[in-house]
Length: 311
Image (cartoon, rainbow, N blue to C red; front, top):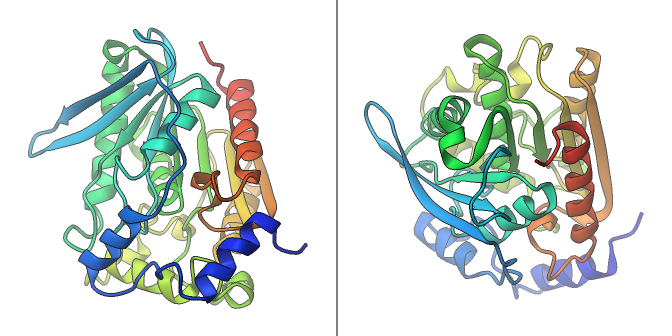
């Protein structure tokens, strides 16, 4: 299918140099460029509260969202933002976290995890895991239902969500669902045709992904063999919760996301996978530029309510 007309405008801007590349310049410049990008207006939300999760050795910042001013008994979504483990933040993904809370009727807890390269794996994973564990035990105090804690994320955030779900197979309990939007699943690009067909010109490039992986995995020779970091390395996916995987047609990550969805299904996990035609990586958070994103928001909300409920 051809590029969606909205997407074609964005792709042309990238080709003309009107939009900076994701990994232009040094880390500080890349972060500044990402943070300066225009975002859609944020949905009004009755409950937006910044909190901290204390662990034995650190304190993790999170932001909670809910349509209720005083949440009670809502399903909970631990949300990890995208940005290649290097870019963005709770602030940078505030608009998407709000939209997720709106369409799912859940209490969304967005994790301001430590970023690479200053904090390579397992820092971001550990932050997300510790927040997930806290929500499973104390989520009721925040207005959620601790028996219904899902994990979700976009891109690198989906990698973190998948890593938490995989860790739960041994460290338990498992999430009630996982929502993975164009997830980063494998640091090895060679098995995936989309890494060739969509290698450049579509917002996220194959070279960008190689750079992001190198920042996240760092110098450890063992990190790339750890399924918490690279979910493709998992020996089994059996026992994982119902899963929704969203991929974008013109995304280098498309095929690895779909391969992961196929593995989930083959290992007996209830799995729904949607390839969204005509769009590129990042579309889910750019509904001001790619209107098809709003349809996908509703798709996610409908799936979540069907699987988990919303009250």
